[in-house]
Length: 507
Image: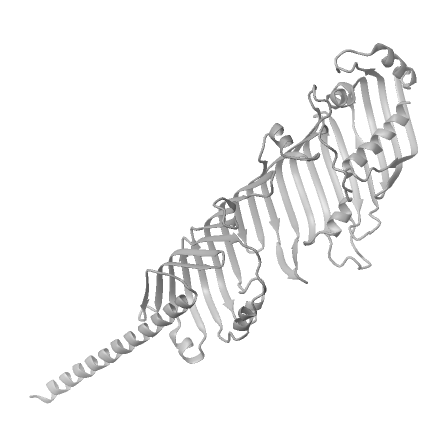
């Protein structure tokens, strides 16, 4: 045999032996990685169809995996790991993955009674010495459902479009945090969300997109579970029925964290656009006699910490209906073209010297006719809950005010209010301020008990004491004092301020 042929055969044998060694090594490593994955799955009591590892492709795949741990269930079509850095694992025991893809995860959580804290989990976390880094994570499809105990009806449901995350990192430090991993970029896209809020309300969201620290919500709805009549049958005391729809909510610079076991939320700007809010109150129900704190106290005592720089609400509509007489339609007031600017909502570091003042500026059309401007301010940190509120109402015909006065107060008026300005300062118990009122040809009719016919005698007496004999009248009253009924809301308090000022002007 020629020398060259011997060399060629030797090279072929060497290549064959090397290929055999690589194949054996590949099979051994693939088997080792596969067994490692299977062992971890088995230790977590997971079931799966199969685990597939391809070392040459540096990939691994788990098919039809499912796991259940005390009220939490996860089912996944596929979990695929690509670009696994084998050398990093063999030399440093660190897990580095180029790409993780999860398809159609279905998560079910049943809210079971809390058990005593298990310290074994923390011990395992403290003993975790490996580092995990995943350069890219992609989750497509899937859903999350939360149930009450073993109920078949979910209290929370969301349908996922996709999640994208970059540079996900897990180590012994991150495992101790509320979110057990760190990341550089995130995109969360949900195409529907439902939450059973309480016995009377349910919440819907059409789309929710989170792009790093910016949030966009469309088609937000807070809906009643019952009709107005059914609502009254499901309450034991006076409780508002309300229906809220918002076209879009945008949040910029949203951050959240845990501070002393309290959730802390902050953002630079929240913009709410195109909202429609209907509130109905049946005064025939038993009164809710609980003490109603002012907004500064409610915000100060919230279990959630807030640090919000600015909130803007545009293009809003609010309708309030109050039923006082069983045999009559409810009294109605509405505000259209509503726009709000709210600055500095914070209940963090309440004891600092430079604590900011919360300022609310609102503009609207009252009863679709009169322009209304309101300025309202208070300090959340102020334990005396002092506030200042002022406003101005433009020209409005009395007939439009009658939509509330006639069914609610058994009174109807004629004439016009040309202009009204009020300015009050107060606290939880008392408010004091002044009012300027200009009106024209203002007359009052007191109605019969049925609310239809005019009570001529009482109306005549009422108009004798109404200062409207001149064609035009102007009144400017100071030191108007109002005592607050603390079982009523702030808005009842404000209504009494305006009502007391108007009575001084008219009488």
